[in-house]
Length: 424
Image (cartoon, rainbow, N blue to C red):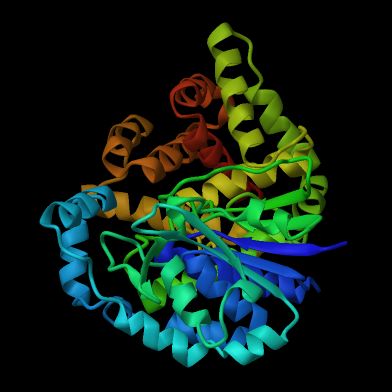
């Protein structure tokens, strides 16, 4: 079976792809074909060399000014004033040729060993677009003259008109994302039977592919990876870790949706606390039409988080996945159910302490509900947990079901916090 890795475009978000690749490499995946567009093309060259240490060093030490001929602060301020589309429109309106990317060329020439890539046996494919003829160029290593690999990798990443086009032998080339930012079809054209496709959810065209031609496993971020034109060490480190965790979840080495939990941890935890959890569900059970709406809304949210059935372990894990997001736990780590329980309780207690300090007094459930609007998602989750803690579920049931109708996501998180704190 011929295996391929397809790496999408996405600028600075490309560090996520390195995290995915590191996880796949750890799981024993070796690829016959690696295709890339834009930053995915740059990563494709690194992947073909099979050098994760170089990949990490490159991504963790890149800054915006090293990639583009612009000050980091200047670009930060410009992006703060508008979207990427606006920046492109501004660049096009000025008639300028785009920002120079000599720094990116230097990085490529420093980290890409063309002889090593060609000797790897990996079929590396990239896409770029001719600026003047508007034609796509789908190129594999035999199509690229010796000594010109970095030129074509750079051409695939030339995000025109924001960046200047790359001239090769008198012809100008721009970003391959103007043709297809997710090069799955390119991998299939090389005979791939199985493709792992990493999508960065960036701007660009998505042309699709024949789904019957190969098995395609899609991996994409569930977290905001930051702006694709801002290169930052700490963001790159986080995104590499997020890519690693996402791949591990996709391939069943961890459980969870946005967070990673040890396999079987919540199933064991739920079984150990089955009586208490079943009591909570029974007390929450709908007896009225609004209650039925609320409970169905809660279950929908839980299913979105990976609770394929209504087993106690899956429901609790999905609710804790929401609660972890509400309480801002670190998404780059792997948690057990017991560690999740401890951290959610600590975060909740910190939240309640903060609220009481700010108001100078203990708050009633009604006051917590009012302040929830000011605190946003975490306030709603916290107020649900606080109401339950203060009154107990039977007395607080109506309030919780009302919250569940309007805020099912946050209510599920609040229920998880309350339950985990109660079981501690």
